[in-house]
Amino acid sequence: MGSASVRAEWGPLRRVVARRPGLEVFFGLLEPYSSLYERVFSLARARREHDELVETLRRGFGVEVRYLDEILLEGAGRDPSLSEELLRRAVQTVQFLGPGARRARREFSDNLPLLDRDQLLEVLTLSPSITLVRKKGARSVLPFTTLRVPLTNLFFLRDQQAVGDRGIILARPAKPQRRRETELTALAWATLGEEPVLSVRRGTFEGGDFLPAGDFALLGTGDRTSPAAVQEILSSGIGFPEVGVVHQPRHPLLDSPDPMVNMHLDTYLNFAGAGLAVGYPEMLQGARVDVYRRNEAGRYLRGRRTRLDRYLTGDHGFDLIPLSTLEQLCYASNFLTIRDRRVVVPDVAGNARAVLVNLQRAAERNPGKYHRLLVRASWEFGELRANGSFFPAKPEAREAGLEATQVALSNLTGAFGGAHCLTCALERG
Figure (tube, rainbow, N blue to C red):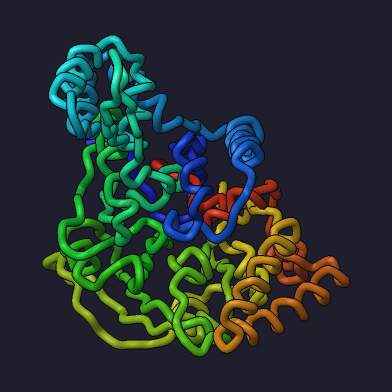
């Protein structure tokens, strides 16, 4: 067992794992919709934003930040068995088709040990398939290379696992585009000696649906996390005295569901400190919560049902910093808490224009679904800009003593996530 443990989102952040957006994101940007992105963005600027986020954590707050690729490459250099495992997986991953495929596969397997280890990771991330087409003439063989669902969301390292009071819970992503991501993160945790306390096998679960809060934890269920996975986590993944299972609410301004608008719990709620929550009130009011208590035998038993806003403010005495509709769409709640009442947050005001442009296009394609949302968000943009009150520059935040460092993430948020989604917090406290 390793030392990975998080009891509360506001515990002092010690260790984080991140992954800089790689070549796979270039291919994801060619078709954003199927890559689970919100909009097209600049890969070069997204990489610079990621670098700024990492440097802010390291130099600004003394957080130990490791890169996923670095963990795997250094581990493979120390451990021959890990190096062999990467080779084996690379051989299994690359496909060869057409005349000469057998020869090509044999030569690829023979030559694979000569490749740099980072090339092996590229193979696993991109999942290439090579179709050979023979033409007339000596050695006139054309290789047509296609990529079989590259891991375009691997840089969102929150979702492949959650870290709770007992350690790492290895996720099982809901979308087939993301299923292979946990194969790489599981190797990294093994390299660090962090054996997961649970690998979810039933249903689906993603780490953005888990928020630990000291005496209790929240588990979201909906498009990305299923009830079966929640029950598996309750049976052997965590040990909090109480767990609130949150049912994903529909956006109050949408007449039909769009799960991407609030795909995870952390897209409309987060904890900025002990007794301090930040969230979108209309979703908190609409979200049902099943309250589970842990008995002396260690089993969670379901008790009453309530609403998320009442559960937080009434049952647990949290103060709430409310977010507007536009701020929620701009990933204001997707901040990373460094310690009690100290957060690193996306530049919400800087994200707003790109979000509104994308929402305008959605409303043009489907006015019946998105028109009301566009009208509300556009009106709020004018109000928030005129008052200079985009989160975290809100009166409620100042009154709560919240200190915030803003990081420009206007490109990275184009892939549907902010500072919280981009980081796997391995250790707090």
